[in-house]
Image (spheres, rainbow, N blue to C red):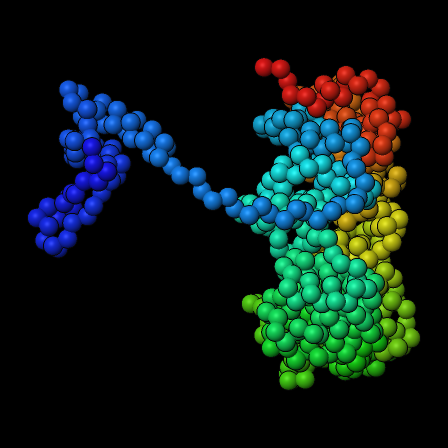
Length: 576
């Protein structure tokens, strides 16, 4: 049998193009298989005689498959990849390694439908917390777990920062070998092994030749040790960087922002990218002593003053009539969004960028509490207070934030600053953790859980005792009201991840089923009992996780389950 057969193109049987195509027997078999033997009969010379065409085609395909495999020549071996950089972090304790494999495999199984999740902990929701704790301990990832860890980070963007830090230099090395893990090579450090920030030549080489992810991590590392050196590094290639990269590098200056950054940021005000200019102006306005902040304060002060005709007890506002070139260079965006007036848009940007200490001097020496309580003429109060809220967030001013939040017992709609829960959460984030938790606890006590989800999200983990008690009390009240627990599934999920694990024993009483009131939803009591059992078991599992990372036997830790078999029942899948 010959290796090739000359065939005429079936689309042009007459060969009108004057050309023929040389096809291999294998190509003829594939074409016949795709078109069907009724439409395209395989060449007779490659078929076994005495059989119908379909069966003969399969026999010929089997024969040629063996021939093709037998005839393969060994390929030239590729160069072996360079070994991964050394990872000198501590080895993960054995018990913690077993827990990590369990979390990555999600052995808890899927939650039930219709909002019912069962009493077993949701392991996927505990993985971010485990990774954060492992990184705090400075452990390195077990090599055998790396593929599963990178797969998990590929599927969940929320895992990536902690997962890539835990993966370390070996994870970055492995990600270069698999296109599916290319996310690890951009936008995050990826655990790259960075040179000593004091080694100028190594720093320069990586800055000029490294991956973007490595350069971002390098800039942060150098800035943490020597802010002046990080600015010099950034300036050395600034004019040749892409706009999106300049924006990312500039954003890194938020960490440790100081007056020494002002000259560099002031030059960035003339950048050819509008986004870079805007970010530079925002950072400068966060420095109350900067020249830009002073210019914004002067502009804002001409717009907001005390109304002398009203006895000096009312604020009057005169919004800007134009947005000139100097204002635009200082970051004021001239075109308002749809539905927004130009003058109010410009006013908000000026007040937002002005230092908050402008206002006591401008408004009669009053305190922030007194200023926010003053009436404002011509319905400008909402615009002015909203701008002060943004300024308090930008300048991380806890006193102004607390004033603009108002009393937690007051209705959000009647608050002095903003009724938006998202904006309130930003204000809360500027407060010290204990004060933040106390405010949210009082808010929950006054208003329940229906509006507290976003506020809880900015509270430090584990929740302080007053906040945890307020959340549990509110859940208990909701149960007594006869509603279903999945109406509060978001808060319940937060409680599982954020309550102090030491609270597990105290919450055991809530796991018992209670008599349902006559007006309760059918079966609600049993569902609540199940939800509280899941909460308690999750807290105990978290306690075990933390103990394992401390090098202890988590099952026998003070806050762990009394019976190891009980934990297995909670985390192992049910038998078929």
